[in-house]
Image (cartoon, rainbow, N blue to C red):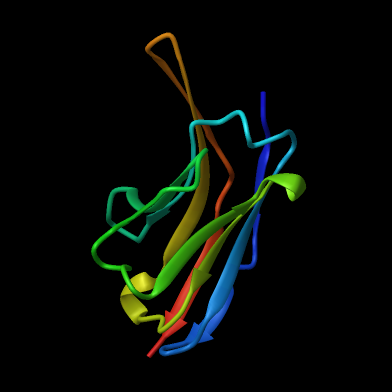
Length: 119
C-alpha cells in the first residue's frame, strides 16, 4: 500500500505563493491519477486539482489560473504550485492517489498539510 506524505504548508499572506509537495513511498507512474483535495473548516473535502498518468490536468474553477499541478515520476512526487493565494484557500490540503483495477476504485490519502492564508 502506498504511503503519501504532504509537505510545504504553512502561513502566507494573501497574494503570496506556496508550493506543496506529495512524496509517495512507491512509483506513482502506475496510478491512474494523482490529485490534491482540500477541506476548509465546516466544509466537505473538495477537489483542487488532478493530473492523470499521461499528464492531463483538471482544476476546480476556484483555482484555475492560480494553481498548477505537476508530477515528477522519477522522484515519485506530485506538486501543487499555488499563486495569488486568497483567505478562501485556507484549508487542510490532502494528496490523493487513484488506481482503477477492473472497475474497482482504490483511493490512497496522505494525512494532510495545513495552509493558512491571512488577509
